[in-house]
Every structure is written in C-alpha cells, then in structure tokens.
Image (cartoon, rainbow, N blue to C red; front, side, top):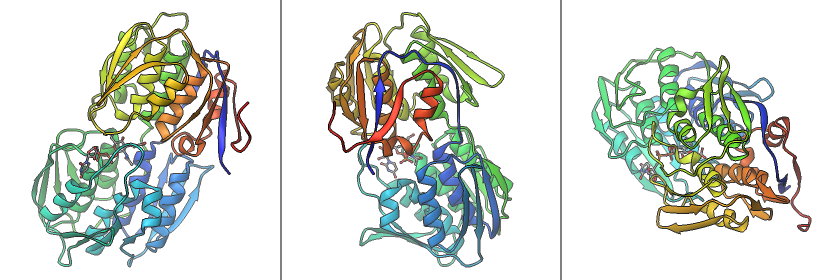
Length: 427
Ligand code: EPU
C-alpha cells in the first residue's frame, strides 16, 4: 500500500532523538559474515526493510538468517557450502547487495552479482570494484547484466590504488583481500566510520587489517576466518538528520547515541551558521531555539568532508535561513531532486550544473511533494515542518528505508506528522 506523511507546519522540535545502527554498515556486515563458516551475530541492526532484503539474498546463498527486528539482532548461520549468485530482482531492490561480491570471490572463488541499474541519485559505476578484484587475481567480466568474477585458484595480495575513494569499492576489495595469499595494500581508500566498522568486525573474525580510517589499508591474508559477535556503528547520517531537524525548525534536540566526531563537517557548518552544538554524556545536542540562523555554503566531499547524504538537509535548511548560499554536489550527478520539490513549497532556488543557489525565505508554503530517495524524503518532511499549513510527502517507503518509524520519532519531539494511505485526493 502506498503511504504518505501529512506534516503540519510550524513546529519547533524539542527533546531527544535516539540513533540506531547504521544502515550502510549493517547491510555490509551481513555480507561480511559470509567469510566465516558458523554463526555470526550482529546487534544494533536497524529495523528497516533493506535488512529484510539482504536477509533474503543471503538465504538464497544458503545462509540461515534469523532477523529479530524488535531486538535489532541478526543471527547468520553460514554453512560450509554456499551459492555465488545475487539475482537482479534483489540487487535492483537493494544496491548494497553488491557488497556480497568481495566475500563471495574470497570464499567461493566465484561471484555472479547483478549489475544495479541507474537510480534516482545518478549513475554509479562498478569499474573500481572490478579493477580491484582483477588486481587480486580474479577474472572479471559483465555478461547478461551480471558482473561475473572468478578466481578458481584463490586470490593473491596486490598493491592497489583507487582513482577515487569509493565506499563500495573499498569495501569489496577489503573483504576480498582478507583471505588472499600475501599482503594487499589499498591506497586512496574511503575513510568512513562504516569502513572502520567493517575492518573491526573482520579483525574480530581473525583477519589482519591495518589502517582503516586512514587513506591506506594494509591486509595480511589469512587462511580462514571465524564467526563473531559485533555491534553495528551508530548511524551518522540519521544523527546528522536530527542535527538538521533541530537547526531547520529552530528547535533543541539531544541526539542520543550520536557520535559528534563522525559529523565534524556538518556540525561545524551548523555551528558557524549560528547553532549551539555541544557533546553530552549520551551523544550531542544542537540548540537553535530563538536564534537567527545564517545560510551556509557547502560542497559535498568524501568523508571526513560534508556527506552527500546530508546535502538535501543543507538545501532545506538554507531554504529558510537568512541570506543566500550555494550547495555544491561533488559525489553524485543527479542528486538534486529535492530542489524541484522544495520549489513547490516556495523555496527560492536556482540549479546550475552541480550547484544550487538558495535565497532564504522566512517560511515555506505547504503543498503535496514526492520523495525520490531516502534522504530527499526525510528532508522534505523537515521542510513541511517549517511550512505554513499541511505538506503531504508521498513515497514514504523511501523514508522507511533509512529511518525506522520516522513519524513516531518526530512526534516525540512535538511534531504533528501522521502516516496515511496515499490513494485519497489531496486536500
Ligand atoms: N563510482 C565509480 N566507480 C566505482 C564506484 C563508484 O565511478 O567503481 C562513483 C559513483 O558513480 C559515484 C561515486 O563514485 O558517483 C561515489 O560512489 P561510492 O562507491 O563512494 O558510493 P556507494 O558505495 O555506491 C555509499 C552509500 C551511499 C552514499 C555513498 C557516498 C551504501 C549502500 N551507499 O554508496 O548512501 O551516498 O556511499 O557516501 O553504502 C544512502 O544511504 O541513501 C546512500 C545512497
């Protein structure tokens, strides 16, 4: 059933919001479990539909998966013999499925993983994934829509340098190299906390990985890995969403479980814009009550730069902040779908290539809008909170992929947001 959120404008969000485990780590860690025979337990797994899709993909590979969403736990029972194919049907529903590529080549010597199609935030290639696996000794080709990688005699260590610090390529090369013969160095890697999380889990499984979180990762291959228990790193993008929720609505939110250190660029930008940001015993707190906040220029960059996943929130914030500002998107080509929807709400914006100029207005004007991906959807809900009247945000299934029970968390902060069927005419 299609659903939408009805968002009543005029909110100042005050209170506390809890941060769950990171979607973009939990899904990858489920794939990492393939590397060891036996029972691996992941805790702090967010209760989102993507985990169910990844669970299905792993079941089709022969893994026993017990996902307890209420307990935020996934137990994966990996048998000695597993399959090697990730079907298009599942990969198109969940791009993160490609993270099984590295573990499968390493464990089985073969992987057939469907090539994901384009999606709403621009084309995303797999060339760096393929080149990395080739350097490790795999043969890689694309046939009938599948990326096929084979290494019947196993992988060997290599010196690899990425042209760009791709998150997905870093993960697949890292997970492929842990069982390779010899030493692998990977330069210009992604430094995201989710990469560090994967490296920590691999280390608990017996892998020898050094340098995660820096630009160079060194892996000394081992013969086999053992299952482990691991807790997923807190979701920095969800935490950043709450920071922007406080700023945009001129509210005051303590982000419980949020790690300020993982959000230095966005929290620094909000501080310079006029918010008060402080770390607390339980996370961090962003206060914007009664403040006049300035719009800020920002360009998205690989971590530790300003995350592309928070770019739609910067746009929404700037739309109602004082002054003019430029947001530049450097990671994805077409990630400006939020702009045309914000314009429907009365935002004053101009797009020029990968730049968006905004001229802040005091208040937006409620209207029906459509979310095109997780982050634009959540950002449009925040826009609705600072609009006059009601805003109807369609495409709630996108938001549900990244924010478990988003409306309940917003209501706990004083917002009036309800979920309703999306088949009635707009009023
Ligand atoms: N790229 C290539 N070739 C490659 C790999 C990447 O050209 O072989 C390009 C892509 O086309 C893109 C850029 O590099 O323009 C960034 O891609 P990257 O590989 O770094 O990103 P990703 O692994 O596909 C992850 C997150 C995204 C997040 C980005 C950037 C997951 C499942 N996805 O994507 O998160 O925006 O890193 O931080 O981890 C989301 O959660 O909604 C989301 C889209």
